[in-house]
Length: 290
Image (tube, rainbow, N blue to C red; front, side, top):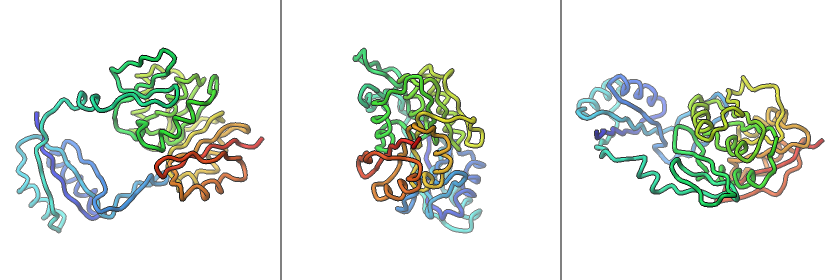
C-alpha cells in the first residue's frame, strides 16, 4: 500500500509540539532531521537537542487531506509553516536496499546484509541490516574502528563498546574471538538493535547490553567508544576506569581538528599511537599505562 509523506520545517521550540499534533492526527511515524544547514553531532549523555530549524517528516496512510491538516496545524502552533507532501510508491524496499549494499571488507572481517554469503572460507562475516541505530560500517568513524579491531588479537578478551549504536563493534569483537562484550548506550533503540543484531550473529550468550548507569563493575581489555569529541572528553574519567592497565582504548567519531583536545583529556593515563584518518575523521588508539 502506498504511503503519504508530509514534510515541514519549524523552529526547534515547536518541533516536539508539532510532532505530538501529527501523531494525534494519525501519523504512523514522525522523524526529525536538520532543516537549515546546521551541523549537530552526537550530544552529551542525557541530552537530546534538536536543530534550530528542524525538519519534520510524517508518514500517513492514504486519504489524508493535507490542506486541511496544514491549516489545523497552523492554528494549533500559531504560525503558518511551509509544507510539502508526496505519495511514496510502494516498493520492495528490502530487496532494493540489498541490491545496493554489498559486503564491506575490513581485512578478514566482512560486514554484509542478511541473505548474502562470503566466498572466502577464512573470512569472518558479520550480518548487519539497516535499522534503528547508528553503525553499519559505511561511515568512516565506524570503518576506522573495524579496520583496527580486525587486526587485533581479541581471543578470550573482554571488550566494552561504550555508545554501541547498532552493536557492530561489540559483535565484531565477539565474532573475532572475544570472550565477552558489554554494549552500552543511552538510547533504548540502540540496545534493541544491538540485541537483535547479536541474535542474527549468534553471539547473544556472550553479550551484555545495558544503559550506562547499569554497567557492571568490570574492566575491559579493549574499550571502544565511537561517539564524537565533546562526549569523549567528558567521559574521560569513565572510559579510563573501564580500561584495565595495559588494555587498549579506541576513541572514534573525532574530526581531525579535534585530535589534540581529545588526546589531552586522556594523556595522563594513556600512550597513543599515531591517529588513523579517513575523509576528515580520526580514530585514536592508546594503551593505558601500567
